[in-house]
Amino acid sequence: MNEYSSKLLEAAVNELSRLPGIGKKSALRLALFILHEEPSYAENLGKAISKMRKEIVFCKRCNNISDTELCDICANPKRDENTLCVVEDIRDVLAIENTAQYNGLYHVLGGLINPIENIGPNDLNINHLLNRLNTEDVNELILALPATVEGDTTNYYIYRLVRDFGVKVTMLARGVAIGDDLEYTDEITLGRSILNRQLFEDSIGKRE
Image 1 (tube, rainbow, N blue to C red):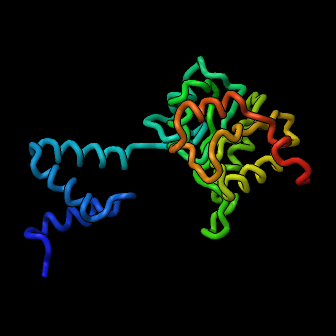
Image 2 (image 1 turned 45 degrees about the vertical axis):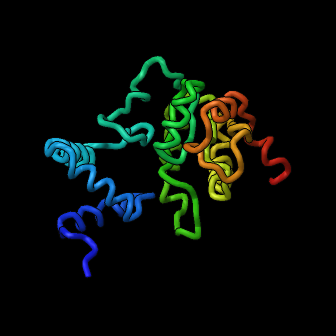
Image 3 (image 1 turned 90 degrees about the horizontal axis):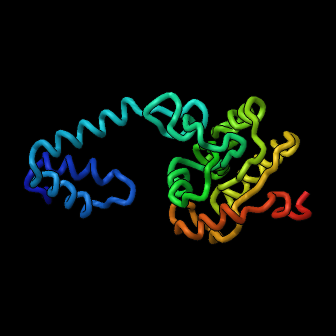
């Protein structure tokens, strides 16, 4: 027996429940909210989502999500172009920007090395990072990846590749709890971790 009185409502709930963290009950609440709003709300919502999906691009310099070929951060002449912060994805850029403690540029990897999920170095924007180090005047590379096994593995892999470039490689101070993603870290803790960053080679000790 169909639990919904409308197949149209059921279809909307099924699509909304595909969103991360949204179950059927939450999807139903969202669908009913949209249903009770003015028709223009649903139309504008649909147009905004469709336009975002069709027109959004990735910054050709840092791989950040952008409306234009070059994102606002890379296009800002007031940013410190000698410092490059490596992050997993756009959520980490937003988290660090919210701290107001960093004024350099970013490089978005688009993921982390994870053999279990068949994600290797070639699946990430690592070669692009190496090209940037070859063509841009970068003095410091900040590895701002999550304090997880996958984050540490990716940190170490990148460090091995870039240590002969003559660039200082640093990482966030471990004010960020082990296993935490940057987007869930409070702004004060994350800001302090950026300000108190340490040399990456000091964090690996005698690993070599």
